[in-house]
Length: 469
Ligand code: ADP
Ligand code: ASP
Ligand code: MG
Image (cartoon, rainbow, N blue to C red; front, side, top):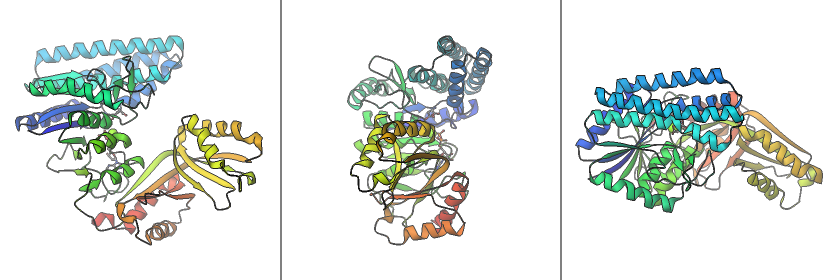
């Protein structure tokens, strides 16, 4: 009997009809004898709306909040009425939704009063998207006469550190607790329906696993249960040669190694959370990305050792937006050992993660790419720590850039890939600001102006004829 953890993303549960569709899909697998754990995201767009509401609350905007609360309740009530036919379950659901929104009201009111939004209170606010969506999926399953039970990530035993906004699971305790909690439910043929994205610290304070974190929840549970596979249901057929929204002719990749898929997700393939592959890779649990609107398609299978080999060196091209390029320059850096280490140490202590690094041969310049929202902080931190010492002359940041990443294990030891990439880019008259190749040789990434990003992706996709694989 196969044990599968299935994650349903925001688009899969965007409306009451979609939730009904998801419930039918689960019921179908259960009737075939599968044991299913469902992990559910917030309804599409709700997490973004909660961020906005939290920001407005901080500013003390009460009117915004009143309207927001009403709309949020309506949206979920409408979804619940479409997803559930049975009147009794429907009424029960309305009660749960109202109580949950009352709880959210208390939190936001608190933020309005103190005029402060801490990472801790923000995570609590953001947890409400999943707290509202998941019971509706549970209700819809019960409507189909399945024994479904709703839990939050914390209730099911996922424990994290207290790095709010980007918390990491404490895997040993988590695995133990999740197994203890879920196995007996599966034995009894229950379908546990768990909130994605949210978890709790050991003191039971709500945390989140970072944006898109429901994927991570699914693989954490998959690892704890030693599941046969983890299925990430989404709105595209699988991981593709590029984002189909940028390259409409992008093709699905039937099989990828954990390493390649990780490289793709770190560099912008939004179809999965970058850290989601870690727990699966450690326990060697295959992950499948599948289309909830096209379940006949087996999707992309991500495994340790790939059996299907694809022809070309380049497999996929991704685009990372919302980044900034920071330049640190000064003749004092030439021949001074440890300058780079110093810069990275300063940023590391300030919790600023670096995506990409390059240093020119003259050594008078070090450039790196970070998340755009952190660029001001990075510049001022570096200025305070370094400018006075004569080592560097200037720290600047460019905010209108993006990273294009070309990924594929076959690039290793294949000469001429880089020249083909940059010739294709040059032909379009696009200027490259910075280049880096990871030592893994799985990835060549470069920085261009944000307005050129999509065209650069299309040019490389065409050069390597990825629409023909
Ligand atoms: P979900 O709500 O299911 O979590 P997301 O919006 O997070 O869905 O991710 C799915 C989206 O990722 C797709 O609609 C697609 O536009 C985008 N995407 C970006 N790069 C890729 C890629 N290489 N392959 C597939 N999808 C991609
Ligand atoms: N709802 C969360 C987000 O929008 C988590 C997820 O969808 O995976 O980031
Ligand atoms: Mg997602």
